[in-house]
Image 1 (tube, rainbow, N blue to C red):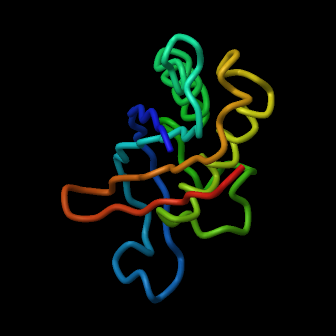
Image 2 (image 1 turned 135 degrees about the vertical axis):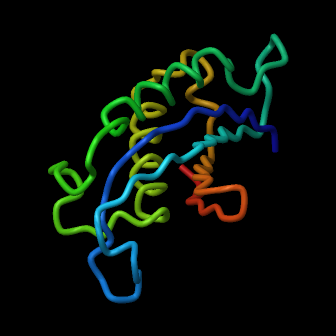
Length: 132
């Protein structure tokens, strides 16, 4: 399996309104480093799994509606607890739509798996990955 991984980041505000989250129940900010890995079983005739430029552009576009936002106020997260895992799944779903819409160019049809990793800090990260 081949993979290309690109990185970006988002700065968000949110609350995690459940007792299990302790002090994070209140409004707080977070900066997530976001890695998106695009997996293929084959390379194209140019030796590429996925065009890195296209992957970077798509990840940036997917993250833009989240950056500098209060996730508690976004309709897409209504009724959801915006944990790292929930946010990783949301980003995964948006990237999967981009793949289905051929937004990664000719290589889109080769992408068979995605992995989205959110780095909360230098000590903790979470991810969501699945086959497409």
